[in-house]
Length: 314
View (cartoon, one colour):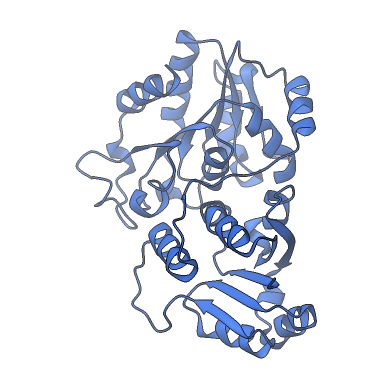
């Protein structure tokens, strides 16, 4: 059996989460776990910690990813037989070749920009492996950790436990925090709720606004937690409501019913891959027309999101 390396160029947690189904397909086709090479920003080592399809995760920091020969030096001694490169990067292809890997599969080199992230990955995997890929990703986690999270944070099915995706990679992808507060307060009048605030240290101002609101005492922040601490908590919840963020894609991969607000990213590339994701786009946009540089976040009303949230929960 071949020793396989999967190379991921993308930097985001969400990107990694979308690609998991493709990694699983490669592992199943080769009938053995694979090694993943990814940037540290993807948090691949934490997210794939319990995945039976993963042999090892090699994470590269910002300095290491820039070192052409440094990467070769790292992977050449591991003597891989095959590489699957989720990129059209000539640089990554040459690194793979010069690392002594005989079979290298990659996106078409020098191809046109503007690829659809999810569809390009799926089509590449299906064509290369000659298999059908179920695009629904799955994150594996230790059941004991999830049970401990339930006890620690009093998570039960008697309460609507909602992961709130208030964070985003940029301001144009972030729905107004005051609208989120009104939304969550409305949900709290209709159901017994607990809110888990999915944001980091850079989102402390947003988190503080929620903490100061009527639902503040029912809110728990992720801002000081490691990603490996948040995953079992998310796995214990039932719903995700929020922006198009890594937290949302993790939630979907943990089988939460998820509602994504797309404002400055294309749902056709980052939303339709999962049966768990319901999509909201700004007024006047469709799943196909909404994309990068749409920048009309003010055209999503509280009433629209509340209606979709009630559909999700009911």
